[in-house]
Image 1: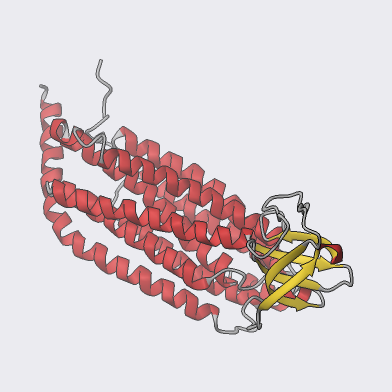
Image 2: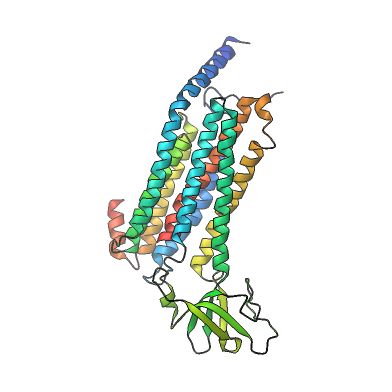
Length: 125
Length: 273
């Protein structure tokens, strides 16, 4: 086995050992994130019962809460925040690029019937 | 020749092959669901106030399903963590709960689908609309669940029986949160101008609802099958090559979290708005 390969094996072994110790700590974190997601679900239902004056605003509020929940799933359960490589960043950008896409759909679709709400969202963007 | 990085991560990227594959696959899935989701939002916000169905679905069933999927996501990540800590029996327990959660999700979803396929809107000759759930036992004609909705029966006085209410126009049916007194209504077939249930063919909302939730349910079935295969028939790999087995669990877990992620967005827009 070459020196480089040995170093790699050692680094991977060390990484695994390190991961096993870390994982014990992360289990508690996973449970906290899980509870946060369930609270977020209750919050989504509660927010939907509030009349913000326009269905478009209600949709935006619901999407913001859903995005925070989505971030928790992707960031912690899927380990995107702890992974340090470009592929994950590309995927993360892909997910967040969907945001403007959906926002455009909201604004464009609401122009005809909710011009004021569309104006508010455009200013926020 | 052995394929490199099939188990061990590549030093420069920190990824093994399957992980690269699943993330690329998930990127394509984001595009698929993103396009459908954007279409839904565009149609939803473009609809004039009062013309888009509101609260047609049971919020509590939807919320229960959301909690079931979140719970399954927690057990998936705990199962992976258990393997990393060399606790195979604990992994078996957590992943068993995941499989049960996926079955519970599908059962609740099928209850919801069944409700929609038994929910009919009947246009009468006098212009009124009767809306409600069909009583197939009391009705003496066969009412199909799928188009064309041709009523068939040999009874002397063919009759459709619904548990529902009567309205003057469609607009009154758009808000499902209004409390309406339901009663048994007998409708002679001769009085019926048109009849149809709340399947995908009913209107734009039900079409996109069934498309999105149906596609999502297919992903739940696929994900649950893979998790089951790794959990049961392929579990012997744990003894031969624990690292490869753990990688498989991680990759199937990533897919399962994605399934949960999609539902997190579907629940508010389909059920609450």
